[in-house]
Image (cartoon, rainbow, N blue to C red; front, side, top):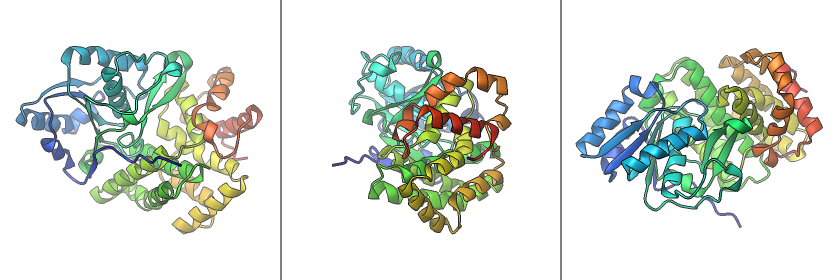
Length: 379
């Protein structure tokens, strides 16, 4: 028996869908965002004006960085307890939405201690705080998932805290917000979305419902991500935005694999972009996992789905089109840093999503794989 959970109340799609906020009952909103992009593109002004016309109070918490620490959540909680909102709105990239998700749950359940992730007993639902997610990037799918990814500095690791209470009540996919993304961000977040869909599709926990969503996302991303990157037109940006959310709905009910385990380990230590690390790791991980008969069959199906002879080569070609480097070394990770921190990176790469990888990983096998990804040699 498998309980599927795709979303909360609704997903709103299309140009100008930010206006949906006009229909939501909000008295005091705690807005969570990053430092600049949502201010520069006018999204914060538009959201603020909508709230003002509703006579709703709001506070803008804009301290969220690329890989937010649990300390960022603690800082936000302190302000929330004084402000006492009835809604939390995460607007911006996946990091902003992840922080908004944690804030909504840890505010309502104030006895929970985010500082100790290994002892958390997280709830299934929120009762008092409405959670709204408005993504500006198309990759993390944080707007539809049951995870909040938070960095724990002392552990040098990004951890995906998971519970149904993290699923936003409302996800607003306003394609206008994606138009301000620079090309490098389109590439990295788009490949994050593809990694979600592919790792979900080859996971041994796959079910028919999630399989259809993952297939649709993979086909759509291969079709529209290159034009979203090259042209940046509204149609392709909107398509990728939707396919990213589909990939999120798919993997939320299945799981991922060791591309994510590796990227969380390296991202937690070195602060590289999660999507960039996933993009680089994915073909290496797929090549390794193709030794599994069932995975190999699924990769053949994906080849047919997108009309190529070799799916892994198609991923490599897509990375090239998006100007994604082919190894961790080529993104500026120094050899001394890699080797000096190697034992910790190895241990952390075996945690998280690697535990549900379709091929069980030993330390010895992971060691070979990490060296291959670092130096750029597919084994």
